[in-house]
Image 1 (cartoon, rainbow, N blue to C red):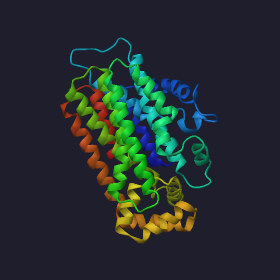
Image 2 (image 1 turned 180 degrees about the vertical axis):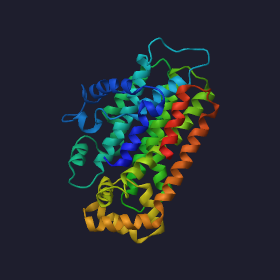
Image 3 (image 1 turned 30 degrees about the horizontal axis):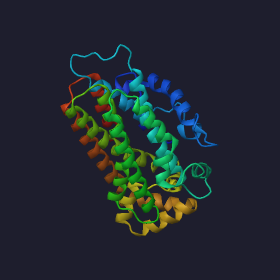
Image 4 (image 1 turned 45 degrees about the vertical axis):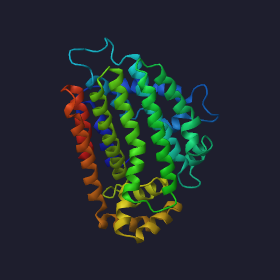
Length: 336
């Protein structure tokens, strides 16, 4: 993992957040692995291949922080935090993310091991969200919540994710514009982060304005995280910029930074398409130079900062608390 990605993951450190939830999130890893790979999972499904145990998970953190930030004034919350309902919703949010990871792996470069493993398990966007056992597990967990509206929120998120998958598949054979890629970000991370924040607020018994504000925060934070991960994957000032470009092209997922560069350098589209089909270090080196020369990295960072600011602005109506401040610090860190 490049230094940019390590820095992105470090945003979840207790010293950065100001609240210690990491031990709780790691505790959820066991439950997540059991639910993803337990009874009902497709034959041959290895949850460890897609779950990356021990990696800090931002979606459960958002559920937990939102539940505390949305706590009505004067209420201390449950004696045990997180309570079982909040833990289940945190796992449900992560299961939605893993379903997306599984789908993205299925779109990878021909011959890749992760692509072969994923394609054995799913058949297109409908399969990911219609019959995929991960999303069914998420639905089961949401149904046990004391806030029945959460099931509707989850179904809305699943619809958005399915539409995002369909858009990503259409873009796989074309030349996506920056707006196209932001649409995918909105339908993937935006939808999941928004669900996570709304679910946390609902389980806390928050009023509608608070639920709406935290959902809006999650939407912008999700798009910002998507852009930040894209910038981190294209680690052009790291030790191996050509290798970073090759790895990103092999993902076959639309890249916001690359779409910006292609809009300014039309010949880059054809070179990127070739690299996505076949590794070529020389071509990857050339593409890295052209992306940098296009100014796309600067524009990508500016767009990231705009989304982070929009997320922070959504928190202004939430009453001050350490957990609201942690949500604020999280997006501030993305923008840096």
